Length: 416
Image (cartoon, rainbow, N blue to C red; front, side, top):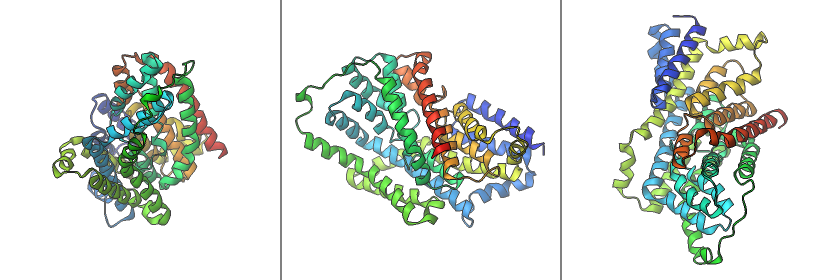
């Protein structure tokens, strides 16, 4: 074994190397956890820690298993929405129902954002491009709107993988985190609207483009949206009915299974279409990443890594607020993943402090905002490439938006 401080430093370097190689986040988190275990634990303890992380006979093990299965189910739901074409029905009808191109541009990326897939901004980019032409927006504005508004939904979306993992690792219920994110999201949306449409003249859609068959479009939209809505309502209801279900992560798992059943019935899904996502590595990679988050936390706890940071805090060498914000935000930025930022950040903080809703929410939003502006973030890269917008020009819009939203998160933390 080596000194814990050396072990964590070496592990972070190892993490950065794997990220530089652009390996899947599931591989990165699990490999980093095992690398840290080799350095910081007696080798004969490692198999026991690996098994205990997902031991179905213990509370923590059941929590790990439920979150892994819930993450897998959410990814399956997302893939089936794409395979059935129901996500296209959602977006197409939104653009025809609403009369304001600005509102359409705000909502379209967020609707596509309901599918938490890597690089998903590329799915909404063509739709945004078409709608933005009505306002004669420049490529950098189009890119900013597509990127920013796609990511306004996740801080309050109860079945997003990062918020599920954040709730599980901190022991705080998903609804409790979401309630504290609502003001931040409102600021995020308002900031995006002001910056995205600053000095853009209003264009009214011609009446003939929207009047006909509005009832049919509304019906198509709500039919396509109903599996997602059923999933969200079920998750919130189950969390409210039973605190134990929420604490063990079963509320989201059960709700997602209900949503999957609704999608299968509504779309009359064939077995061939249903089986297609199971042939893709991505659906397994996300679940593997969820397990890696819990394994990393287990190893950090067993190795006493949090004691290092606890000594810094107790000696007054570092402020707690810096740990709650700078650490997860930096990790989100470096990993290009809110899940990675939350997993490592929460693991470091475990043992230093007791997680409350306000602390869990600040850790989550810090990691999330760090990820949103990361150049390693696939949505960021794909959006810039699609709209042929240099990253520097896109950052002119993104950095002020990040600063305002981050300030809102701190205000919520200190005053609410």
